Length: 107
Image 1 (cartoon, one colour):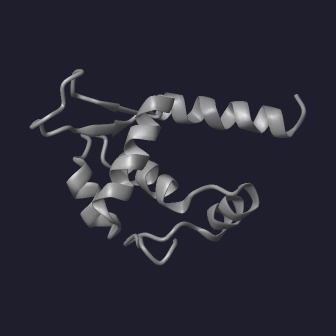
Image 2 (cartoon, rainbow, N blue to C red; image 1 turned 30 degrees about the vertical axis):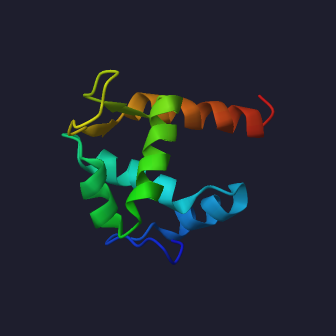
Image 3 (cartoon, rainbow, N blue to C red; image 1 turned 90 degrees about the vertical axis):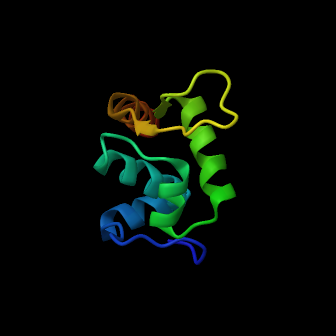
């Protein structure tokens, strides 16, 4: 993980190698991993504390993951003043991985 984030459970060597080969942002992977381990969901504040990353960094990645469909929330359009719970969409993550694998392998 980068120096600005750490996880209590570091990724296995195979995952670290894949992140290096494909230029994957480690914090984004750590967010998806953490949310996958907490199916009830987590707030952005809890995620930032767990990963020891800045709140702004975590929030930006959560917004991008939500936009891509890998993460869902319990919030509607208006989020101001709300406590938003983020949940990983494992089907969307699997689909994205399968699509990328097919592309890489020329299928």
